[in-house]
Amino acid sequence: MMAVDVQKLTTDSLEVSDPERLQDQLYALTEIAKTLTLPLELPELLEAVMEKIAGVIEPAEVGAVMLWDQPAGLFRPVATFGYDLEILQEIGLRAGESITGKVFDAGVGSLLRTPEQVAQAMADMRPSNRAVMARSLGVETLPRCTLAAPIAVGEKKLGVLVLETLRGPQVFSDIELPFLQTIADLIALAIDRSQLAEQADAIRQEKQAERMRSEIMAVLSHELRMPLTAIQGYASALLLEDVQWSEEKRQEFLHQIDEESHNMQIMLKDILDSALIDVEQLALEREPVRLSYIARDVAGEVQRRSVGHQILVDFPNDFPILEADPRWIKQVFRNILDNAVKYSPDGGLIVMRGEVRLTDVVVIVADQGIGISPEDLIPLFEKYFRVKSTVKLHISGTGLGLPIARAIVEAHGGRIWAESKVGEGTTVYISLPRPVAFDETED
Image (cartoon, rainbow, N blue to C red; front, side, top):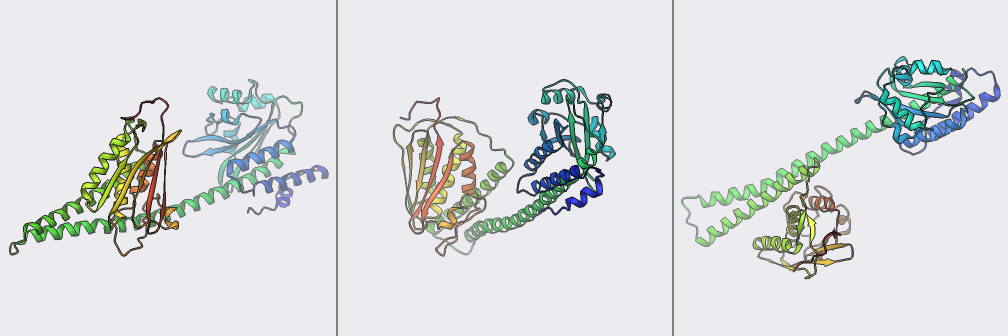
């Protein structure tokens, strides 16, 4: 909450001989101060304040809060009345340009009483900005009278509050300038509070991200060290000159080396795919694809590494051809099947089937594994989240497989979710939209 002594602000800055007008202004400032404490985003707050101003300062036909965008070196309108804000946002006033730039540089409010004074102050406005202003107002003529006050907190300049009359007959008087400056000061406090909150939030997020990075590095180093240790151990055993291993034992060691190498390959690919998604480089190359072919291909690949599981693929003959990126869809199926195998340590049946619905298709992967508790289902598709095993068993992985699958599915316009019961297995659902352009079905 923003604690502001409105009466002190007003009596310090206003010199109004009319007690009734002073009372009106005090009431208006109180209402504006209340508005600025509402739980709204800053643009919404400022829009609400501009509505209040429009009803209080009668000569004002249009107004705008112009904030200084330091990185761009331009003023940006964030709240208005009387203007078309969407059009006005095309404007790009520079420092010192027009009335806004001059008041901002001087740090002192200004009252331009006549059209001649307004025209002189706006003489250096670039034609492109003048055209944007005219389009946003719907008239070509310059304002008749302008009132502007700097928005600042101490030495920190934030922007300018500008009010203007277009047709009249009323124009601004001297008593409106200190009143407007008080409003600008209230706005400045709200903006400063918002910026401080954003900075504090950014610091919290950075600390959280740093903590997460540390945890991730610890997890990844642990997960990568385990297959490396196993590979080194089996390779060292095979290289022992004074031990004659049987062919069966040699094949067992080589199989373990191959499996652990595959695990490392999966982890590294997950990390690389996750990095691509983080920098928004997940580019799709869509083409007509038969999901049943991709599903059978991936199932065969996973089956060859998982002799303790039986993977069944079941797609109807009328399953439609989709427009998708086969490489990324293959990665989705691979990630989900790998998870189904890992979380079914005792083997069992894994069923991958397709269903056709009115507006989408659904690929369903169901296993008979250890299952997932209800509290783990909610963050299941979040990065680095690992399901807590209910059995005393280490399950390798990076916690990236399902988040990557979700990103790929959502990039295709689909969605992914899971259902599970502890001890009864997990079912993952992948919904993808059916294209209008393709009526052809699979063989």
